[in-house]
Length: 353
Ligand code: FES
Ligand SMILES: [Fe+2]
Picture 1 (cartoon, rainbow, N blue to C red):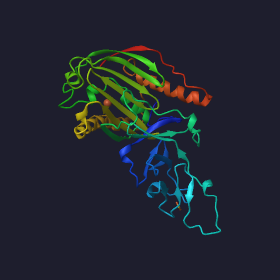
Picture 2: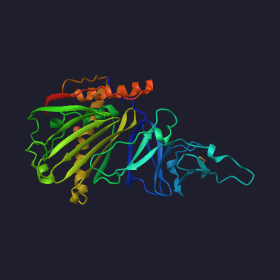
Picture 3: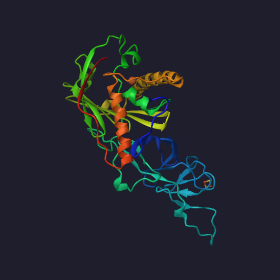
Picture 4: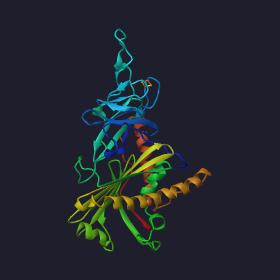
């Protein structure tokens, strides 16, 4: 079972980058799902993504620069547009006509929304026609133009399965996420009972009231604070907290670098206006939390590298089991060329946490 590596889902959207990390002049190179990708902005600022490899001699295009909305290779100056087609070979002289558009590097469908850049990883070599591609994940209460108030990304040296298990693991917080200011004496576990239901590409913990002892939520968001937490393929956790006065949306996005390494993005949007000036503080505490998750997967890796097996028990690890069932159905549906059918049923999970 899930060792050091994970199957990576294709035919879906991954969060690549926060919008602010891609300027107008310099391409950015990264790896998603084992694929080297270069991102740049066209002349009108729209981002585009190409395979990060120059068709001439294979040098990664991210070493080049952006010129007139195209990527110029750093080696001999060949330029490539948003569709991956070559638009200029500077060394050509009159009479040396070449059909430039036949020289190309694959392009990936790209969207910019919620202050992030999303890339579609196709199943095969070529992406399907734009009209056949579904849209990236939708977030509640948010306009697509709304940028996060806080965003951080952290490399996790583990497979996307173990990163996902961490997200939906209700019983590790008392042991892992402890500090002087949070869950100081955390090991006093309480019995919990949570209601779950399937959602289009995953499942959700149904909307429920935040326990009254969490006074900070009431202070920030007003009375009647409730939350709903959704998990969906290929690796998203969306938490929507709502009170009488304000709301917060948290997104954790798991983007596989390859079978054994992952980037975890943590972003927040909120109607609370004062959060933007406080963003460095919010980012600091988010980083402390994520680092705690990262430290345990580093330790876990040591065991897995030695051949340790993984156990998933009821009900504490039922969500991780569901996750593997969803992934399996995604792959089978694609192989059979049919629509994804969510195999999950509504269920109440009971555990102590
Ligand atoms: S290697 Fe890119 S232009 Fe020659
Ligand atoms: Fe955690």
